[in-house]
Amino acid sequence: MVKHVVAFVMALALPALAAAQTPEPGARIQVVTTNNNELFTGTLVLLDTESLVMTTDRPGVNRTVSSSAIKYLAVGHHRSRGKTSLIGALVGLVAGMAVGYGSGDDPPGLFSFTAGEKAVITSIFTVPAGALTGLLIGPSKERWTPVTLSARTAIAPIATRHSVGISGSVRW
Image 1: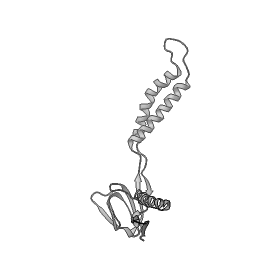
Image 2: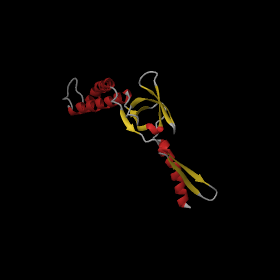
Image 3: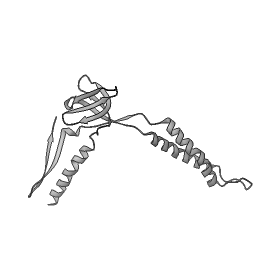
Image 4: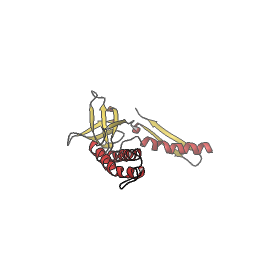
């Protein structure tokens, strides 16, 4: 009985894992076709078992590629300006704290600060400077993650009154 339950749970989990690899409409994609190794970059409109429809980077140009003609498919990722700005602010915070603490306590006098106070004061200036630097540097170059087309394999659980099983198909 335990084996059947484990098999059923695995059968339910496998399609979810396969679906996680499938790009969603609106994703930036790169496609290389088997036809002269043509490379197309653009936005995914539709992906099903038969074909892929995308808008290319050239305005108003749509491209339909049959699934059997797809040699390589990748999804593009890059950091947003918000992330690079946040990273810059964190670098500014660390730098401000290091400079403030590193300079030590001031000798007693009219304007004397402890190392902790100097760290806070210095960070007031370095955090916005770091955030602005991160914003100006901007996002990194687009990185491409290869995707295997999960539409070529299908796994589904089968449950009857007396048994549990897995049904699968593989398409080339």
